[in-house]
Image 1 (cartoon, rainbow, N blue to C red):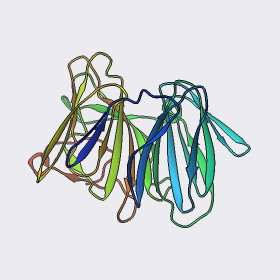
Image 2 (image 1 turned 180 degrees about the horizontal axis):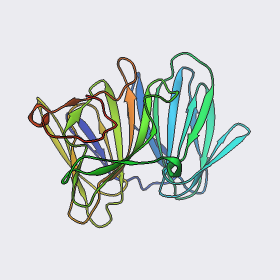
Image 3 (image 1 turned 90 degrees about the horizontal axis):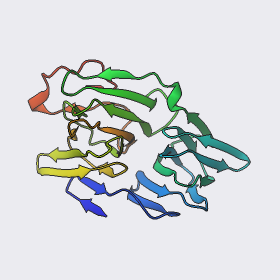
Length: 253
């Protein structure tokens, strides 16, 4: 089920196997996901495009011509240029972010979650561990990605910030029997979504803090797609919270 607000779009966890579903698409950016069944799912990357493919829930295998890459949950594969891929691994959730690749030909690389050293951002009440797998300095043109794992019952993506030059997707996990509240707010209004494990929210614009129920953790994959300007982690903090200390952060004021 899809619930669309003025600023964000909420999708319940995908249940149907074997389909690659487009969640959001514009000329510069697309987000897709698929729940793999007995048969592989096909993905085509077009000329002048790049894609980040995240493996969630269970291991998956991605075939790219003669090359085969096995990903564990929370690993990422990057591909740019014209490519046809087969995505296998029954029970795995595949999340794809696509953007413009700029100049250059075919390229690919893999990022392993186990190889990333996290850091803790925020203070009591809004602490989270940040895992940046693909950042500003990596060889992508428009895509960045990683994982945020909040502390039990605390806020993440806080102080509230926005980056209207980038569209973002969150795919949640680790909430267990609890749930999270995702807010997406701008000057024209606010969208509020109740999210559970493996739901997704596409953040089109606006500030987007979230919080977990006590005893649960707000954990999510995030993929950013730069739709205007040069790729960056630059954000704008909400004016009511600009003086709130951030501590160490992957974001740039």
